[in-house]
Image (cartoon, rainbow, N blue to C red; front, side):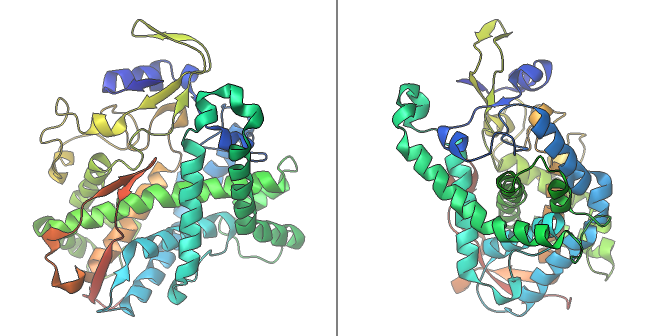
Length: 423
């Protein structure tokens, strides 16, 4: 295992020798999931044919500038559904993390399959818990090493990994199986699609090389990619702004001056430079995946006079780099102003700031995630004032973190909304 803990070393692995370290190092549980080796965009062990094909389809349907523009109405509609629901809960305690997760899940599900996963208005809490539990389970078990990963000789008797993999397989199939079968039987003729008459599911079904299991795995991975880290960042951004009322007022004033009475939109919110800086600062101070997704050396390579053997695991300590006082003043303090007079962006071109990774295996949905965070938080702040249950002071909000493979707020974000504007 090799850990890159400086911008220069991260650059060596993710730019100078990017191709040689473009593999993924994954635990046995992932390898035991049926048909995962050739149905993944983020976790594919190699940048092979299936990876390139799925990434291309994802680019056309979800990640490209054209796709994002086409799907902007979906993001706005789902966020306004959430706003409408919260409006009906004025004065009550709401679990904001649940609502953010469900809204993001509906956004990506609508883009991929032209249908929602949740009915936000009915707030089916049990269904939230089941889906969030599955997302957390898949993330944890496909990225956390087990005993057999350290002692490969045990793989022939590794019933634990196989059992866990089959349990996840059944849950993934239960989530997506009926949607895939329904679309296959209808031949795409009677659904409302989200992108030029074809959504992601249409396109992969049209390619006979993808099995139902592969499609389900790809849909699950895209759901996780669009919900987990974005929910984490949205929650932390709300927490940081609620704790810092001066910053919150500054963001609200900026949004109010830009929106001028209309509903917040992506094009208008993108003009709010201080708000954008707040999002970037949250991604710096609260990196959703502190060690990114593990890379793997596809061949033996020398880096900084060290020989890195083939199949070594490569971790990029994005959390440590983003808090390094050699590169950031007041590195552990939330200071959005630091991003107002700099060209540092979130696209992985500055190696002291890698919230979405960089290089070949950079998160393909970074721009979509940024737009989702912008729309969610912009609307939550524009339409509502927020307070803590029991009259607790906002500065006393719990800041404890919980780390598995992502770094999230330990306790759920429970807040009481009060309407500021009618939506």
